[in-house]
Length: 612
Image (tube, rainbow, N blue to C red; front, side):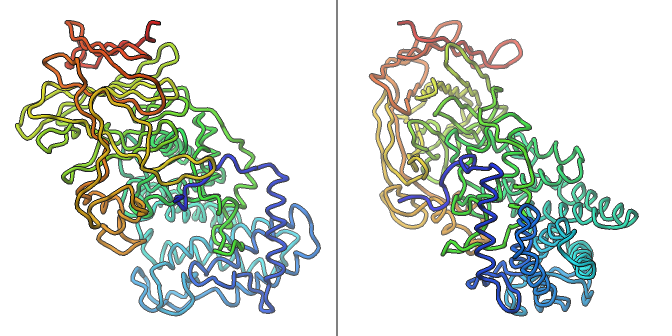
């Protein structure tokens, strides 16, 4: 079973002017065939996200006309713009809308669904989207739209801005991407206003960003991030926020958008595997946006010097929003407009700088969470998620049913490279059920193909094992598919176990249920509104790789050694001495210094290629 939204890397989509002209030509033919006598360009099956969609197609036709001067387009733009202004601009309050600060303001807004009171909660983002579509049409209006109609559209865009920032509470869904989109709309609107009004709107937009978005950022993995639906990051909406930050910087030149975009881009770079797989977030968990992410990933990938375009998107939405039949939908059309206008090229090589929350080389990578426990492991084309045991989640030793991976103090990290090898040593203090403080050392080494993980801790009671994740998905070229098979070798006994119990709080990787579906089933609220990350934390047990202690370990230590990915015989050797623990495998030799670290308390790591 393939994961629906995890498809090809976004930088694989052609982005030459010729490729974009072909996209616009396809949109043009679909739009001209769809245009109704009333002037609507909405997809026939469009029910929600509808308030901005016809205007979005209008903006794409306006851009196509600017590039091709197709004589069929002015009439289509004229009719469809008239339709939006006549049929899709609402001024009476939507019954039941809960976020008004001013009742009966008369300001225009766009509806998420057309029926009064049917689903008013979505009107705020729909109005943001309509504002963005409107300013894109205004940008292309010269020579295409007559002065009276242009003035009417500008007045509606002004009203959208005032409804968003005066008549309602700002960012009522606590969605960073929507909020930054509103700021972008204000910045773009200001360019069409008289100087004094432009200054006021532009300043207001920057102020909203500083006070309502930037001041509310949430920290994760060392980065401050715009909050998304109550969480720090969502793998669907986070890259959309990055695209909004790119457009905000392009439009305004304000350094604050570049700084925050760089921080978000480095965060995304660190949490992504080399293969571009990612999961997690408070809204959609495994769903990925497509073309809506391209602008931000491309723009900031070039700025930070990393291949963010490896991010796997939903390539069914590779160019623009579509309905199930593949027909173009105008929702998000503004992002395609900006993507075409931006001349940034993809940066296609990884950043050479080590990142605290990532180990990456070649086709092997580890993304670490805020506690420096692996959140995602990739090797041999397989992606491994943290396993769950007794309601505890992560990678680490298990003794007496207790998982040792939550730090009880400062977590220290040391990176090393030598002879084509890349390594990271993570040292963290942990406490078990016996309340004894132990130093857990986890060494991750890769040659770009395989990944070796060695975990050492002071001797554990009972018979411990290493919870080593579980194989969840596999790279299938241009798709990602579910799997329960991975190439893993252990120095000790290796078991792939599955939960004996059944139900929503036990995840068996052999089933066709995806992590996303299981997480939403455990969430407190309905799908689309619940927090799948929060739901997943209620998981009791999962499929798990369990590795027994490695033979030949020093008497005072419990040591585990696992290799992910291809390789021959695996017989690691260990030696403990005054300088620390030495680990030798068929590929490398590593010296892990005293758990207490050097004079500054920082861990010591020496790495070299194995002698032949």
